[in-house]
Every structure is written in structure tokens, then in C-alpha cells.
Image 1 (cartoon, rainbow, N blue to C red):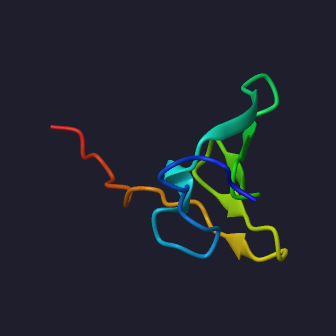
Image 2 (cartoon, one colour):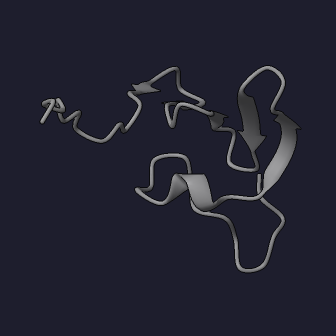
Length: 66
């Protein structure tokens, strides 16, 4: 459990990615947060209960040649 004061957001909170880093592996594209969330560089998350949070990617706009 989180020992920080104030405590980090829990894994099921909307702001779960604001938790402190426990391990950071940019060469592999993931970080482990204090609340047990695996956060991936594509903005996806894997929660401690196994639930997958899909990456949040901006909508793609096709460009037209002028």
C-alpha cells in the first residue's frame, strides 16, 4: 500500500496515473506506479486486478493535399 502523504490515488480512480513511480523502464515502454498500476508509454494501463485500460489516443485527422 501507498505510504505517501497525501496518499496516491488508488488504481480504480480516474487520476490513477498521478501516483508516484516505483519502477521506470522507458527502454521497455512501461512504468510501475505506487498504486500497482502498470502504465505504458502509449497511455494504456494494466490495473492490479487485471483490468486493461485502453490507450487514450487523439482522434486522427486525415490531411488533404492542397
